[in-house]
Image (cartoon, rainbow, N blue to C red; front, top):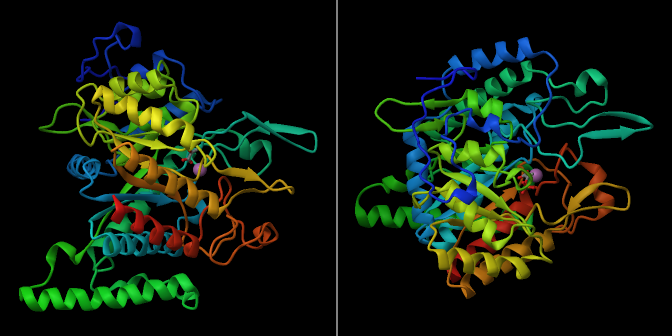
Length: 469
Ligand code: PEP
Ligand code: CO
């Protein structure tokens, strides 16, 4: 059953939270968030057109299923216990015009290669979650942008408006919601077909070769590893006299920031023989650091859906506040339900992470810890180009692993912005990219991503750390 955004569906997950101070006394339903302040939402001028698009979206088929979602939740529960590692990665922001064979395959290849490195080096299963098939809405620090004296609404991601600097392009356009849904479906359809059709077969990692890097150090390291894996698989299969079926293929879950609540609501559905409501636009939606107010609309929406969810946690998160948010988002303290994605920046992680880990440990709240070493380490060059330094990204990741080890906790996941494209957006790394290299191939419209080599470097480093856990 689906709900139109305007209907008031019967609430199915009554509030279980007894703490009156958390102001979660209203009954949840897919649109109960509308009673609260929703930050970072676009303003549409044509309400009739918006209603029409939302009505149509609410009747279209879901993009993912509740089985897949529940399966991911189980995996995340295992990750919290250190039984497997989760790698979440992809573009900062997907682009409607770049929904192409090449870009989907390249990003998938990097994630496959990274997870192969992680699995083989750490000897642990790895679950992949792409920032893909719906990562179209972006939180911004300002509502407007001024260029040469002209001020226009800021670009908020391709599902909302366009990045070109004209009034027309910066208007929030309801048609883009439908386009975003459709592009997500096209992307997911292709990923599913690739994964089901042999692309993800571990016996054929040559499928994941990204030709243009065949001469790089990271690629050589990777090729050596592929060779050893091939031999190991063959050996195990000879000994077992069977193929290693569990290893035969790997799959990919999807994720995006659940920022645009009207869109998320239109894909929030009930399914037969299961209680509650699922966001069926993605397996794993997350709440951004800018929209995680305890009394805000995002927390309200997210608390009622059944999906496993992520919460970005930056340096301004207070210790008590985190405990309260976790209570609201995971009232039954379900394991695998809530991932805390910390993103402090290399300078601040030492100050903030220990206090938050200690608080969560002492309250006995079940969470899956994830490090996002990207979003706290962004800076602008003297020419005003947004970038990140690979050294700082690595250092924050490393500190994350060390702090979790010291606190007796498990860092179960890493969240990275990356691409299989040969971009020059982050400085440093094996090729020691300089600020002067950035203009050569800077394609991101929002945050700078790791390129293939930089991402592979990161996976070798993460693998070493997982071994140590
Ligand atoms: C993001 O993940 O692209 C993002 C905006 O992150 P954060 O909410 O952590 O700033
Ligand atoms: Co980003």
